[in-house]
Image 1: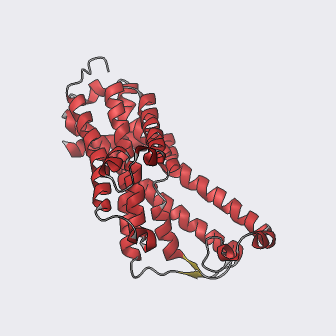
Image 2: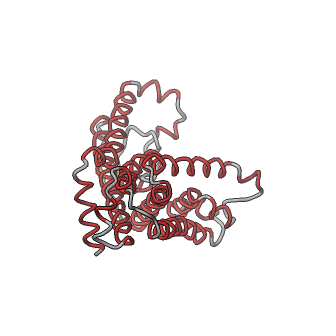
Image 3: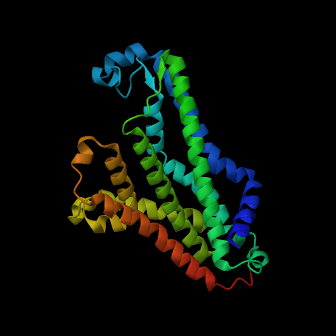
Length: 292
């Protein structure tokens, strides 16, 4: 049963403490440490920086403000929007690669495939990776809030928390979009694991694909394409993620977005998630595991 596969995969993963640290705890801890060091440096050089930077950047409410109330509600929304960054996706992929390709690496497929259907074995891994992504998200948000509290203490800024109006919808939308992006990225790793039977390929193939798509996105004007074209979204899911974030953020950029671009972006993320999963399931169902 699927529930048995999920329990088994979860049990094995929770016993792999290094994988949990790298995929869930490392990046939030790193960002918190770097952010705290930057805040202390900024406080020490605040007078010099205020003279060198434009006033609108350091004024109250600006991105580099060091005075005035610090709105934790806005910070929470911003943290949710920034979750699916390349560093987070890279380190979450470490845990996903171990989950997807570990049975090939340790030659344990033959011990588990006789006890459950092959579809359930793969889907159990996918559900666990989804849980890992959610755990990484919660950790990211929690450490981000700790960073904001440290920032408020360093600069002696009062704290406020406003979470009304459009913010709940934005927060939920950013969580959905960023989690979908990280899961879509991991599905490439799943397909690579099933086809190559290699842990290294599971790690590096999604990275190579993402780098190629990044450079393709930079080359869209040379191809005569724009962010509103369907083919752009079908080839570059990262572009779809960025477009959906822009729409959720609102403002002038969202108002200038072409009609229907959000649906194209959602279609792209959906296809880049479902198609690799379906191919991996089909490939694995016919795979010879006698030597695994």
